Every structure is written in structure tokens, then in C-alpha cells.
Length: 471
Image 1 (cartoon, rainbow, N blue to C red):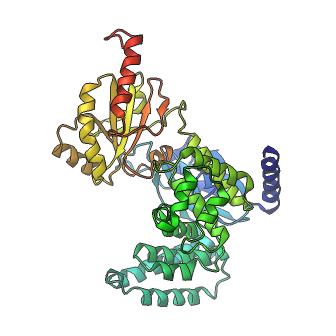
Image 2 (cartoon, helix red, strand yellow):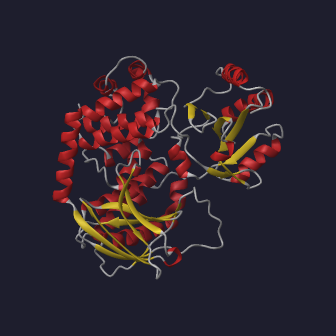
Image 3 (tube, rainbow, N blue to C red):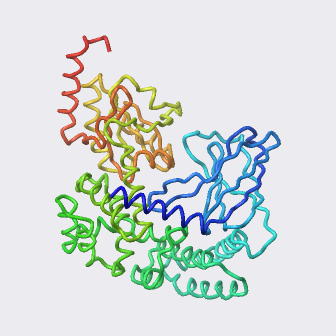
């Protein structure tokens, strides 16, 4: 297996070196002198694993320059401090940009990555970035004039007319395949978000279409269309085999066969990609065996005929290995209800029961009621709840309404790094972290899943090693 993976990697490097062309970015970032400017892309748009392309230190006058190679058109990101800004990069092109200035009127949490807009010097009206900006302006104008049609679910006809008109408008331009997909799948994502019929969407955007792995808009549509699709199919009678495979000794080919009855998955390649997305989404689903999911991913990473799928499988495995028992818990710095900042390192030396929830999550609130009792009963164990609501005011309102929930609550809403680091795709979710800052249980049981017995064991072990009051 190692020989096969090594051969694949060598072939990948050879192909990359033959196809890749240099991209040059000259820029100005006046607010960031002395800081490191990073340019990165995503290896895949399922796990969003980052790939560093180049770095440069911003000069005293604010200038920087980045040179790197890419094999195809893709969306890349410039990042400095907490701020990132996207750019559509085409192989062989040069760009002049101005990085967004720091906004002194806003207080940024350095652990929360913000997104800004580059000021791109564009004189070529056939360049991808110019075309994207032009299309976005036209689409915004269309949306503003037709929003009510979508509210009453009569937006399909005007959207079809807009789509025909926009393709006719750009027919005079020497368009890249990337931009054509950008148009189609930007419209497709709008149709998903306005609850267009899945049958229509599949007909227009999935059937007889090539999977465009590196196109951000295609993959945004894919991720929206197949969101929770794998699990929902597993709940149906015809998807019962999925449960058996993920909790027994099934293989990846068994799982692919089990997905054949699923709607829209007649294409083998698409079915395998949906399977990978489903395994990624459901690794933390307690209804499935994590060890079986990892085993299937290992099989795909070594045996799939599709190089991109082998890469995605390896990235999923790497992502989940970050949260294995005995590895350091991902660091964070978050605000409490009084907007005082707390870091994970503040709790070092204690057993930490880390919970994730949201004010809209009825299970989270229900289970939190039991944590009130445990928080008093086990002073050796620190309980911290991170709330993922859209607004910190939602957390404050909940705590005001429930004064007995008086342990440490922190606000993590909008923190994509936190979500990424803890593979947080659903709440409630729980972790147990040891005094050394390393994960003891990942995931940990919930309050009604034997948690009290677990805490009793911790207390017994601790009192056998230390006298009370010495900790």
C-alpha cells in the first residue's frame, strides 16, 4: 500500500510540474508592515484543507510580492493577521492588488478569521476577476428586482430568462470554462437556497455534468445540494444497508453499492464523492462506528481510481486524527457573557469537560439542566460550554433566563477556525480534556450517557493520588 501511495504522489508531482504555470502577485498592505503575507488555496472543497502556496514579509513601505505555481484556475486567498481576501488566479497571469487596511474602529478576535475584499487593478475586461465582479453586479441587480418572485416561489421563469440573457451577453467574450461554471453554479446555489425542486436542480446541474472539483461555485452547489443527504438516506428503509456497513465489517465497495438506490446517484464518480462527503459529515455521529468510517476511508485513500477522491479521503483521515485521544486539544480564545476573554490554557491543570451548544438547540438546553447538578457535585472538574449562536446576545439572553446555568459559558459563534479545529458539524457535542491539555475522550459522553460514572472515576483516581486541597 505504501508503494502505491508513493507512486501516486510521484505521479502527482510530475503532473503538477508539467502543467503548473507561475502566478505573480504584487501588492500593497500599508497597515501590515513587518507582518507575514500568506497566499494559500484549498486542497479540496470538502474538507477545506489548506495548502500554503507562498509567503512574503510586508516591507516597511507596505509592499509585498508573491510568486507561486498552479496547474489550473482556482480561487486562492491572501491572508495577513486575522484577515483573508480571495482572488481568482489564472495560471500565467500577474496581478496588482491592495490588501484591505486594518479597521481601527472594530475589535477583532485574533482567533476569528475575517474576510475582506482585495482592490485589484484590472484593465483587461477578459480577466476572470473582472468578469466575476461584472457578473456579480448584474446578478445583484437582477435579485433586487425579482426578490419578491422568489418569496412567492415563482422565481424559476425570471431566473431562466436571466440565465439565457447573461450567457448571451458574455458570448462575445473569450470565456474560460471556469467562468461558465461560475455563472451556472452561482445561479444554482441561489436556486438551492430558495428551495427549488431537487429534481429540476439535478436535471440542470448534475446529470451529464463533469464534476468540477476545483471550482468554488460548483462545489458550493454540491455541498448545499448534498447537505446531510447521506444520513437522510441511511434513515430510509432502502438505506438500511448503510447502517449495517458503518457498524459492522463492510468495505468501501459495499458502501458504494448500498448507495445505488439513492436518488441522483446513478453516476459512479458522483456517488463516490457523495459517500466521502457523508463519511466526513457523520464521523461524529454516534449512530455510526468511527473506527469503521476510518477503515473505509483508508480503503478509498489507497484503492479509489479517482486521484482527487484519494486525496479527499486522506485529508479526512488527517482531520480526524487531530482529535484523537492523547493529542493536544485545539487552542481557542473566546469571550464570556461579560466579553472577558478566556483561553484554553487558562484551564490547564484541571480536568475540563468541554461542551458545545446553541440557544436554539432544545437538546443542548435540556442536557445543560443536568450539568447544573454536576457542576456543583464535582469541583475537581471544570465545565465550560461554548455557544455557537449567530449573536453573542443570544447566549446572554439564555443565561439571563436561566440563572442556574452559572458555570463558564463562552461565545464561539462565527468562529470558523474553532469549528474546523473541533470538527464541529452538529450540537450538542462534548470533549473531555486532561490537566495536561490533551484530549482524554473525543468525543466524550453527554450528560445522560454515563457522564456521572465517568466523573466518579476521575474523582477516585485523583483522590488516590493527592490529598484533598493539594490540587
